[in-house]
Image (cartoon, rainbow, N blue to C red):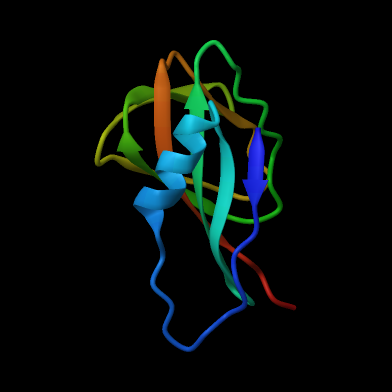
Length: 115
């Protein structure tokens, strides 16, 4: 798995989702942050079978948007079938992972809670 950090924050910043997706696919998967600000993290997550999804529950709410592929997201024992263009909300602390995929490219949006 590869991980790449975003450049410093600017007032209006374009996000290279396609570029991140291509880099991660060439590296056989991983996660790349394309934007981080005090209340938000946006990243691209690529999974390539047979590599399993090793996610652990997160402390922030998140939304997954499938950019490419299809698969199943297991959330707290419930299966959600997903394909390109689908999105799903996963609450903070929920046990979840992708299964039954060959290759998935996912846009991940984390809402970062501020005290």
